[in-house]
Image (cartoon, rainbow, N blue to C red; front, side, top):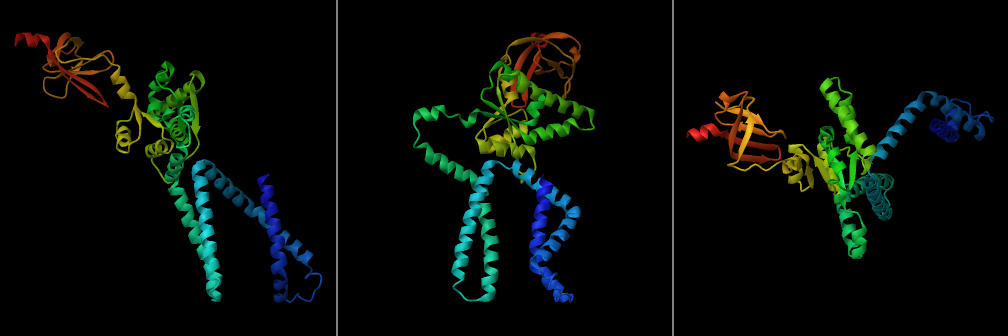
Length: 362
């Protein structure tokens, strides 16, 4: 259907150009005396035929360009298009008013060139101002409208904090599905389209490990969407000016006032720096682990050497690493240890201990 529309446009353009320019061309070629050729209907038909023949070569290129433009516009968020269009309108309005004022100056070249230059300049500036200042305009309208709303209306309106935006790492990790199932993660789960594209790219990787991670992430998304009683939305927009997926996620969280769900330590720090609300799955996992205090006694099995001299390494059932001082000689044995200190970070928890036998000897 689109190709037929393009061909029809070519016919209309060809007929119009035939009426305007073919008579002049015939005069140059010495055919101006032929009355039939100078007929407007004949020139329109000839121009339409010429452009129709051109469509066999050009229609595919025009079709591909239109589809590319359509796909690009679909990916742009509605707020970007709306405020960009409003800015473009005001820019063109200013260009018209300035051009109208310049018409009073009777300078032929200026009157011919100035409207074109002003239209391009103010149209571009208006679009850029509207596009880049959309967040400020949204917040301005939001603050102005909130004063007129009652307390009941505000309580019924869903908060932006109810949006939970998932990043690639937390989807591949998989624990977010179990958290959603328990009901601890409420609101709407938002899956950005660019995160889905990154997951698909990972799933199509030639590396077996990366491919399995990508497929696991897609399976987790299917489970969240089909099996769990939680609302899931796909964010179709994209930020073409930003290359990194993490930066796009931060931008989306700012735009929607949502909360970013991740287990990426570095992304967590970036969100804290940019004042973006973030839920770190690792922080949640650490929070629900049993509390171990200095002075407590544990029974562990030392399984390998530590980084420092004479250190041994053991693990609790939940995966917490225990560094046992002077524990190298107990590798492969279960021993009682005394906790000396606990190190807690967003990257995990580490327990330092020493053998209880050594403590008794001292």
